[in-house]
Length: 226
View 1 (cartoon, rainbow, N blue to C red):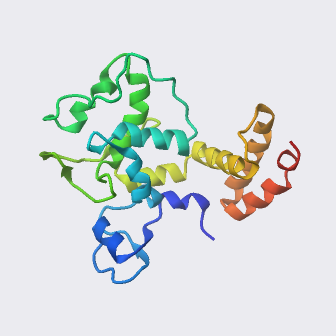
View 2: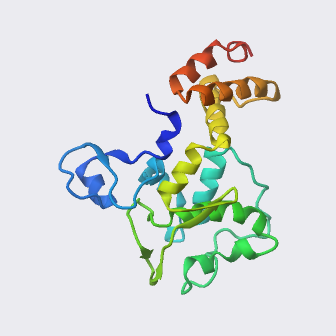
């Protein structure tokens, strides 16, 4: 059986002919598991259902995509957005390429959060809002997409590389265990739950198996008794 977190680095997906056409995958005549073509990759990071969450200002938002990964996949937390920041205004000049438009990483008051979110999100810029593959920005064809990103200080390029980093990141496995606990218990974790969650993450890292993790979870006293 494969590693649970391979869902972030799988090189194939279940697609219909219509979805394959949307993704730019040729030769698909019936629904089934199909290998990603070209540089497309990153498992579920390449799915339109995830990528659509980054839609903003008529295009993709590296900030929103990066934040979704940081929040949902790594269980990261950021401070509240300051009241004087208008998130409904597109950053920068529309004629500039996106890395220059998203100047917040270089602004003293913004860099703390945007160096986290934007640096993750820019690595997915080869994907449009609906998961279509692109090599240039849709409104600025002279702006080439390089998909260069950084996560926790590690540089990477493109969704496949990001998926591999996530799949081997212990923060991601710890978050996955936590998210699974929330789903099964129907509540958020509390301080007293943390030793159990740490033990479950250790169990997962030993076997890299969702099945063994589920068995260990339902057997744990912390799960059975609140």
